[in-house]
Amino acid sequence: MKLLFENWRKYLLKEDISPAIDEFKQCYEELKKQAEVAHRPTPTQPMIIETPYVGCTYNGEDILRAKCLKSFRYLGTGSFRSVFAVPDNPDIVLKVINVDNHGNGIVKREPKTAIQSNKEETQFGREPKFIEFSPKVYEVAEDYFWITAQRVIPMANAPDKDRVMLNFFPGFENHWGGFEWFVWTKALNSYVNYIKYGKWVTRHEAKALDIYARESDVGVAGAIKRRADQERDLMRGRTRPADVPPEDFDPAEEELASKQTFTSLKGLPRRSKSFKAGGLVSKAEAEHETPPWMEGHPKKMQEAVKDPNHLIHRLVNFVLEKDLTTWDFKSANVGYVIEGGENRFVVLDPVARMDKN
Image (cartoon, rainbow, N blue to C red; front, side):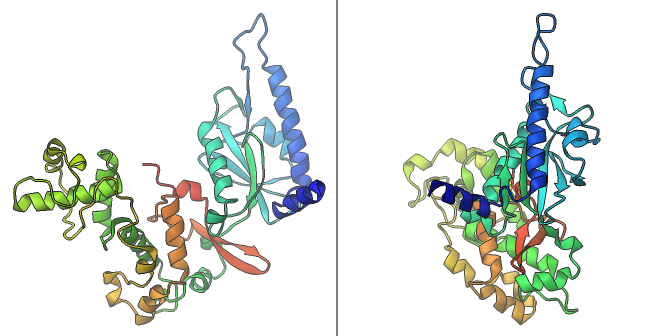
Protein backbone atom coordinates (compact mmCIF):
# COMPACT_ATOMS: atom_id res chain seq x y z
CA MET A 1 0.00 0.00 0.00
CA LYS A 2 2.84 2.40 0.90
CA LEU A 3 4.55 1.69 -2.43
CA LEU A 4 1.29 2.25 -4.28
CA PHE A 5 0.78 5.61 -2.55
CA GLU A 6 4.36 6.68 -3.30
CA ASN A 7 3.99 5.77 -6.97
CA TRP A 8 0.71 7.73 -7.16
CA ARG A 9 2.38 10.77 -5.53
CA LYS A 10 5.21 10.61 -8.05
CA TYR A 11 2.69 10.39 -10.88
CA LEU A 12 0.86 13.50 -9.66
CA LEU A 13 4.09 15.47 -9.29
CA LYS A 14 5.51 14.06 -12.51
CA GLU A 15 8.50 12.63 -10.67
CA ASP A 16 10.67 10.06 -12.38
CA ILE A 17 9.00 10.57 -15.77
CA SER A 18 12.03 12.31 -17.27
CA PRO A 19 15.20 10.24 -17.69
CA ALA A 20 17.05 13.47 -18.49
CA ILE A 21 16.15 14.92 -15.07
CA ASP A 22 17.18 11.65 -13.40
CA GLU A 23 20.57 11.87 -15.10
CA PHE A 24 20.90 15.53 -14.15
CA LYS A 25 20.16 14.74 -10.48
CA GLN A 26 22.84 12.05 -10.39
CA CYS A 27 25.39 14.29 -12.13
CA TYR A 28 24.54 17.20 -9.85
CA GLU A 29 25.04 15.19 -6.66
CA GLU A 30 28.36 13.82 -7.91
CA LEU A 31 29.53 17.32 -8.79
CA LYS A 32 28.59 18.55 -5.30
CA LYS A 33 30.56 15.73 -3.67
CA GLN A 34 33.59 16.46 -5.83
CA ALA A 35 33.37 20.14 -4.93
CA GLU A 36 33.14 19.33 -1.22
CA VAL A 37 36.24 17.12 -1.39
CA ALA A 38 38.19 19.63 -3.49
CA HIS A 39 37.36 22.50 -1.14
CA ARG A 40 37.82 20.67 2.14
CA PRO A 41 40.15 22.51 4.57
CA THR A 42 43.69 21.16 4.91
CA PRO A 43 46.49 21.94 7.38
CA THR A 44 48.19 24.09 4.76
CA GLN A 45 44.99 25.72 3.47
CA PRO A 46 42.55 25.95 6.41
CA MET A 47 40.45 28.76 4.92
CA ILE A 48 39.33 26.94 1.77
CA ILE A 49 35.57 26.67 1.27
CA GLU A 50 34.01 24.20 3.71
CA THR A 51 30.49 24.00 2.20
CA PRO A 52 30.49 24.90 -1.50
CA TYR A 53 27.33 25.95 -3.31
CA VAL A 54 27.00 24.68 -6.87
CA GLY A 55 24.98 26.51 -9.51
CA CYS A 56 25.12 28.48 -12.74
CA THR A 57 27.07 31.61 -13.58
CA TYR A 58 25.70 34.55 -15.54
CA ASN A 59 28.35 34.18 -18.23
CA GLY A 60 27.45 30.52 -18.82
CA GLU A 61 30.96 29.18 -18.25
CA ASP A 62 30.24 27.10 -15.16
CA ILE A 63 31.11 23.46 -14.51
CA LEU A 64 27.47 22.51 -13.94
CA ARG A 65 26.49 23.52 -17.44
CA ALA A 66 29.53 21.85 -18.98
CA LYS A 67 29.07 18.53 -17.15
CA CYS A 68 25.40 18.11 -16.29
CA LEU A 69 23.40 20.26 -18.70
CA LYS A 70 24.94 19.48 -22.07
CA SER A 71 21.68 18.07 -23.46
CA PHE A 72 19.49 20.83 -21.96
CA ARG A 73 18.67 23.81 -24.14
CA TYR A 74 19.35 27.12 -22.41
CA LEU A 75 16.26 29.37 -22.34
CA GLY A 76 17.41 32.39 -20.36
CA THR A 77 18.76 33.84 -17.12
CA GLY A 78 16.90 35.97 -14.60
CA SER A 79 18.17 37.85 -11.59
CA PHE A 80 18.61 34.71 -9.51
CA ARG A 81 18.08 31.64 -11.70
CA SER A 82 18.87 30.12 -15.08
CA VAL A 83 16.19 28.22 -17.00
CA PHE A 84 16.64 25.21 -19.28
CA ALA A 85 14.33 23.17 -21.50
CA VAL A 86 14.16 19.50 -20.55
CA PRO A 87 15.19 17.51 -23.66
CA ASP A 88 12.78 14.59 -23.23
CA ASN A 89 9.77 16.52 -21.87
CA PRO A 90 8.72 19.73 -23.66
CA ASP A 91 6.14 20.53 -20.95
CA ILE A 92 8.73 20.96 -18.19
CA VAL A 93 11.58 23.40 -17.52
CA LEU A 94 14.50 23.16 -15.12
CA LYS A 95 15.37 26.20 -12.97
CA VAL A 96 18.82 26.29 -11.38
CA ILE A 97 20.14 28.90 -8.95
CA ASN A 98 22.73 31.42 -10.10
CA VAL A 99 25.71 31.61 -7.75
CA ASP A 100 28.32 33.80 -9.43
CA ASN A 101 28.86 36.43 -12.09
CA HIS A 102 32.06 34.84 -13.36
CA GLY A 103 33.93 31.71 -12.38
CA ASN A 104 33.21 28.00 -12.21
CA GLY A 105 29.84 28.16 -10.44
CA ILE A 106 31.17 26.98 -7.07
CA VAL A 107 31.06 29.58 -4.31
CA LYS A 108 31.23 29.79 -0.54
CA ARG A 109 28.60 32.45 0.09
CA GLU A 110 25.10 31.00 0.29
CA PRO A 111 22.90 32.36 -2.55
CA LYS A 112 19.97 32.94 -0.17
CA THR A 113 17.78 34.97 -2.51
CA ALA A 114 18.00 32.41 -5.32
CA ILE A 115 17.24 29.54 -2.93
CA GLN A 116 14.33 31.48 -1.41
CA SER A 117 12.93 32.10 -4.90
CA ASN A 118 12.85 28.35 -5.51
CA LYS A 119 11.23 27.74 -2.12
CA GLU A 120 8.51 30.31 -2.73
CA GLU A 121 7.83 29.12 -6.26
CA THR A 122 7.50 25.58 -4.93
CA GLN A 123 4.89 26.85 -2.47
CA PHE A 124 3.02 28.65 -5.24
CA GLY A 125 3.14 25.60 -7.50
CA ARG A 126 2.03 23.00 -4.95
CA GLU A 127 -0.36 24.56 -2.45
CA PRO A 128 -4.04 24.32 -3.52
CA LYS A 129 -4.83 27.98 -2.72
CA PHE A 130 -2.11 29.20 -5.10
CA ILE A 131 -2.07 26.55 -7.81
CA GLU A 132 -4.88 28.00 -9.94
CA PHE A 133 -2.71 30.86 -11.18
CA SER A 134 0.75 29.34 -10.74
CA PRO A 135 2.76 26.93 -12.89
CA LYS A 136 2.85 23.54 -11.18
CA VAL A 137 6.15 22.57 -9.57
CA TYR A 138 7.24 18.95 -9.78
CA GLU A 139 10.61 17.61 -8.67
CA VAL A 140 12.57 19.80 -6.27
CA ALA A 141 16.07 19.41 -4.85
CA GLU A 142 16.18 18.95 -1.07
CA ASP A 143 18.31 22.08 -0.76
CA TYR A 144 16.19 23.96 -3.35
CA PHE A 145 19.21 24.48 -5.60
CA TRP A 146 17.03 23.49 -8.54
CA ILE A 147 13.35 22.83 -9.29
CA THR A 148 11.33 21.53 -12.23
CA ALA A 149 8.10 23.29 -13.21
CA GLN A 150 5.51 23.53 -15.94
CA ARG A 151 6.65 25.34 -19.01
CA VAL A 152 4.63 28.53 -19.53
CA ILE A 153 3.75 30.17 -22.82
CA PRO A 154 4.02 33.96 -22.20
CA MET A 155 1.15 35.99 -23.65
CA ALA A 156 3.73 38.14 -25.42
CA ASN A 157 4.71 35.06 -27.45
CA ALA A 158 1.23 33.59 -27.91
CA PRO A 159 0.09 33.28 -31.55
CA ASP A 160 -3.20 35.11 -30.81
CA LYS A 161 -2.76 36.64 -27.37
CA ASP A 162 -5.85 38.89 -27.62
CA ARG A 163 -8.15 35.95 -28.35
CA VAL A 164 -6.54 33.85 -25.63
CA MET A 165 -6.94 36.62 -23.04
CA LEU A 166 -10.56 37.25 -24.06
CA ASN A 167 -11.29 33.56 -23.52
CA PHE A 168 -9.91 33.91 -19.99
CA PHE A 169 -11.39 37.36 -19.26
CA PRO A 170 -14.51 37.90 -21.41
CA GLY A 171 -15.83 41.43 -21.73
CA PHE A 172 -12.47 43.20 -21.95
CA GLU A 173 -12.73 43.70 -25.68
CA ASN A 174 -11.84 47.02 -27.26
CA HIS A 175 -13.49 48.65 -30.26
CA TRP A 176 -11.12 46.87 -32.65
CA GLY A 177 -11.84 43.40 -31.28
CA GLY A 178 -8.57 43.15 -29.35
CA PHE A 179 -7.98 42.72 -25.64
CA GLU A 180 -8.00 45.93 -23.58
CA TRP A 181 -4.83 45.37 -21.52
CA PHE A 182 -4.78 48.76 -19.79
CA VAL A 183 -8.41 48.56 -18.64
CA TRP A 184 -7.93 44.95 -17.46
CA THR A 185 -4.88 45.88 -15.36
CA LYS A 186 -6.64 48.94 -13.99
CA ALA A 187 -9.74 46.90 -13.09
CA LEU A 188 -7.61 44.27 -11.36
CA ASN A 189 -5.84 46.97 -9.36
CA SER A 190 -9.15 48.69 -8.50
CA TYR A 191 -10.73 45.53 -7.08
CA VAL A 192 -7.60 44.74 -5.07
CA ASN A 193 -7.64 48.22 -3.52
CA TYR A 194 -11.42 48.16 -3.03
CA ILE A 195 -11.21 45.04 -0.88
CA LYS A 196 -8.02 46.24 0.79
CA TYR A 197 -9.22 49.73 1.75
CA GLY A 198 -13.00 49.44 1.74
CA LYS A 199 -13.50 52.17 -0.86
CA TRP A 200 -12.85 52.80 -4.53
CA VAL A 201 -9.54 54.69 -4.49
CA THR A 202 -7.25 55.85 -7.25
CA ARG A 203 -3.87 54.29 -7.82
CA HIS A 204 -2.16 57.36 -6.35
CA GLU A 205 -4.40 57.34 -3.26
CA ALA A 206 -3.68 53.65 -2.69
CA LYS A 207 0.05 54.30 -3.07
CA ALA A 208 -0.10 57.08 -0.46
CA LEU A 209 -1.85 54.75 1.99
CA ASP A 210 0.60 51.93 1.27
CA ILE A 211 3.62 54.16 1.88
CA TYR A 212 2.22 55.49 5.13
CA ALA A 213 1.19 52.02 6.35
CA ARG A 214 4.67 50.71 5.60
CA GLU A 215 6.78 53.58 6.89
CA SER A 216 4.78 54.21 10.07
CA ASP A 217 4.46 50.51 10.90
CA VAL A 218 0.71 50.73 11.54
CA GLY A 219 -0.47 48.45 8.76
CA VAL A 220 -3.24 49.06 6.24
CA ALA A 221 -5.95 49.37 8.90
CA GLY A 222 -3.87 51.85 10.87
CA ALA A 223 -3.29 53.91 7.73
CA ILE A 224 -7.03 54.03 7.01
CA LYS A 225 -7.82 55.11 10.57
CA ARG A 226 -5.01 57.64 10.69
CA ARG A 227 -5.96 59.26 7.38
CA ALA A 228 -9.61 59.57 8.40
CA ASP A 229 -8.54 61.05 11.73
CA GLN A 230 -6.35 63.59 9.94
CA GLU A 231 -9.31 64.79 7.91
CA ARG A 232 -11.42 65.05 11.04
CA ASP A 233 -8.69 67.05 12.84
CA LEU A 234 -8.74 69.68 10.12
CA MET A 235 -12.32 70.48 11.14
CA ARG A 236 -12.02 70.33 14.92
CA GLY A 237 -9.59 69.80 17.77
CA ARG A 238 -7.42 66.70 17.94
CA THR A 239 -9.60 64.44 20.10
CA ARG A 240 -10.23 60.73 20.14
CA PRO A 241 -13.26 59.69 18.04
CA ALA A 242 -15.87 57.57 19.76
CA ASP A 243 -15.22 54.49 17.64
CA VAL A 244 -11.45 54.43 18.30
CA PRO A 245 -10.40 52.68 21.56
CA PRO A 246 -8.25 54.76 23.96
CA GLU A 247 -5.33 52.33 23.62
CA ASP A 248 -5.24 53.02 19.88
CA PHE A 249 -5.15 56.81 20.23
CA ASP A 250 -1.81 58.56 20.72
CA PRO A 251 -1.88 62.39 20.55
CA ALA A 252 1.88 62.49 19.90
CA GLU A 253 1.50 60.15 16.93
CA GLU A 254 -1.46 62.19 15.72
CA GLU A 255 0.65 65.33 15.79
CA LEU A 256 3.36 63.64 13.71
CA ALA A 257 0.84 62.13 11.31
CA SER A 258 -0.87 65.47 10.78
CA LYS A 259 2.34 66.82 9.25
CA GLN A 260 2.26 64.17 6.52
CA THR A 261 0.67 65.05 3.19
CA PHE A 262 -1.66 62.65 1.41
CA THR A 263 -4.21 62.68 -1.34
CA SER A 264 -7.60 63.34 0.21
CA LEU A 265 -9.51 60.15 0.97
CA LYS A 266 -12.85 61.53 2.10
CA GLY A 267 -15.24 59.02 3.55
CA LEU A 268 -12.76 56.33 4.50
CA PRO A 269 -14.07 54.68 7.69
CA ARG A 270 -12.13 54.96 10.95
CA ARG A 271 -10.99 51.66 12.41
CA SER A 272 -8.70 50.62 15.24
CA LYS A 273 -5.23 49.18 14.61
CA SER A 274 -6.59 45.74 15.42
CA PHE A 275 -8.88 45.89 12.40
CA LYS A 276 -7.75 43.46 9.70
CA ALA A 277 -7.56 44.44 6.05
CA GLY A 278 -10.36 42.96 3.99
CA GLY A 279 -13.07 43.35 6.61
CA LEU A 280 -14.42 46.66 5.28
CA VAL A 281 -15.70 45.14 2.06
CA SER A 282 -16.38 41.46 1.63
CA LYS A 283 -15.36 39.58 -1.48
CA ALA A 284 -19.03 38.95 -2.25
CA GLU A 285 -19.78 42.69 -2.16
CA ALA A 286 -16.84 43.51 -4.43
CA GLU A 287 -17.85 40.92 -7.03
CA HIS A 288 -21.16 42.70 -7.68
CA GLU A 289 -19.69 46.19 -7.89
CA THR A 290 -18.21 48.05 -10.84
CA PRO A 291 -15.38 50.58 -10.48
CA PRO A 292 -16.85 54.08 -11.06
CA TRP A 293 -14.30 54.89 -13.74
CA MET A 294 -15.65 52.04 -15.89
CA GLU A 295 -18.90 53.94 -16.58
CA GLY A 296 -17.40 55.38 -19.74
CA HIS A 297 -16.48 51.93 -21.08
CA PRO A 298 -18.60 49.47 -23.07
CA LYS A 299 -21.64 48.09 -21.25
CA LYS A 300 -20.58 44.48 -21.80
CA MET A 301 -17.32 45.20 -20.00
CA GLN A 302 -19.19 46.59 -16.99
CA GLU A 303 -21.58 43.65 -16.95
CA ALA A 304 -18.74 41.13 -17.26
CA VAL A 305 -16.99 42.24 -14.07
CA LYS A 306 -20.29 42.14 -12.14
CA ASP A 307 -20.36 38.38 -12.67
CA PRO A 308 -19.02 36.80 -9.43
CA ASN A 309 -17.73 33.87 -11.47
CA HIS A 310 -15.57 36.07 -13.69
CA LEU A 311 -11.93 34.96 -13.51
CA ILE A 312 -10.75 38.43 -12.51
CA HIS A 313 -12.29 38.03 -9.04
CA ARG A 314 -10.41 34.81 -8.33
CA LEU A 315 -7.23 36.49 -9.61
CA VAL A 316 -7.88 39.32 -7.11
CA ASN A 317 -7.89 36.74 -4.30
CA PHE A 318 -4.58 35.36 -5.53
CA VAL A 319 -3.04 38.84 -5.64
CA LEU A 320 -4.23 39.68 -2.13
CA GLU A 321 -3.20 36.34 -0.66
CA LYS A 322 0.48 36.85 -1.52
CA ASP A 323 0.51 40.66 -1.69
CA LEU A 324 1.52 40.72 -5.35
CA THR A 325 2.02 43.90 -7.33
CA THR A 326 -0.39 44.37 -10.24
CA TRP A 327 1.19 47.27 -12.13
CA ASP A 328 3.42 44.92 -14.14
CA PHE A 329 0.77 42.35 -15.13
CA LYS A 330 1.65 42.83 -18.78
CA SER A 331 1.70 40.42 -21.69
CA ALA A 332 5.32 39.46 -20.94
CA ASN A 333 4.53 38.64 -17.29
CA VAL A 334 1.41 36.51 -17.65
CA GLY A 335 0.80 33.44 -19.78
CA TYR A 336 -0.82 30.05 -19.91
CA VAL A 337 -0.06 26.37 -19.61
CA ILE A 338 -1.75 23.60 -21.57
CA GLU A 339 -3.32 20.82 -19.51
CA GLY A 340 -5.33 18.06 -21.15
CA GLY A 341 -5.80 20.16 -24.25
CA GLU A 342 -7.14 23.11 -22.23
CA ASN A 343 -5.43 26.44 -21.51
CA ARG A 344 -4.94 27.62 -17.91
CA PHE A 345 -4.07 31.26 -17.16
CA VAL A 346 -0.99 31.71 -14.94
CA VAL A 347 1.15 34.52 -13.58
CA LEU A 348 4.69 34.17 -14.88
CA ASP A 349 7.18 33.80 -12.02
CA PRO A 350 4.78 35.02 -9.29
CA VAL A 351 7.69 35.28 -6.83
CA ALA A 352 9.04 38.21 -8.85
CA ARG A 353 5.60 39.86 -8.67
CA MET A 354 5.59 39.86 -4.86
CA ASP A 355 5.68 43.26 -3.19
CA LYS A 356 9.01 43.24 -1.35
CA ASN A 357 8.58 46.71 0.14
